[in-house]
Image 1 (cartoon, rainbow, N blue to C red):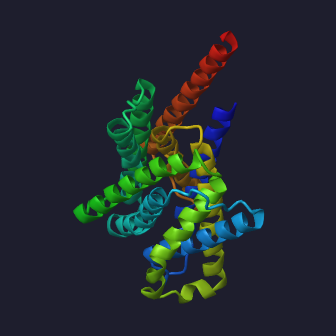
Image 2 (image 1 turned 135 degrees about the horizontal axis):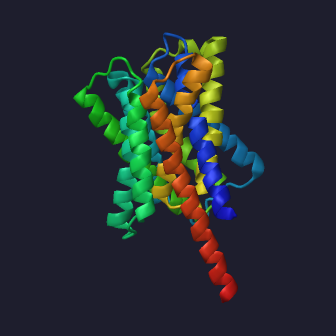
Image 3 (image 1 turned 60 degrees about the vertical axis):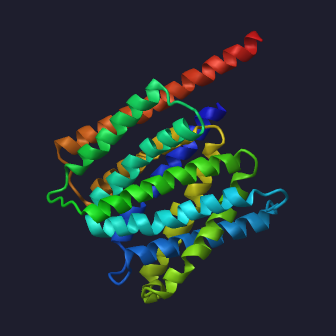
Length: 298
């Protein structure tokens, strides 16, 4: 049951991430995407820090500094890389390349550095999910490829995979709330200079403040807490594949909230995403069932 609840928390986190595209589309015209990313971390980091201080769960005893710095750098790099990629290649290409490449990088990193070879089910699930993302892209009327933007998107994918792998090591030993609070506070500090580079006057408007609160508290603070909580019992490669529910959520919000229309290819892509994610859930249930049987037999 704990493994299943971890999967549910990661899927909920991905669904909350999926609201960022729709939310950013409602942002004031003067809000630069990179500035939105920096503000998102600043609000999210502050929110998490306040929560962990009020809960009294912050304990720096034997805290792994190097691992924390790696996680913070990964998240700090992810924001400008991803939002710059989206700016240069468009939302569709930037999102699909970033989110689609992250599971592959995650599985490769686990295989090479942790000597954990991904299962056959993971490969099938990841393939179907990435193919589903690509078919979702077919809904775009005009698609243009910017080589630099693609490289930046791949860099964002590596950053997210690295953050997931390092964070999993942290949440195994410390409270997930403490981990995300420390990591995101450091990440926000690393990106804080960007707040003085771009025009931030948009945040004083009602719409700008509302968007900042949603992106910071809901799509960052709560979402990454759920993700970290789920990481305690799910491998990093599986968690990153499950996060492909993000573009699925974004596409459905585009249909039901923004009023976008999806063609046949896109709906087929949604079906493949659901099958891919469903395979991972089914595989996890079987694994948990076998482990429980082994415990009973012992």
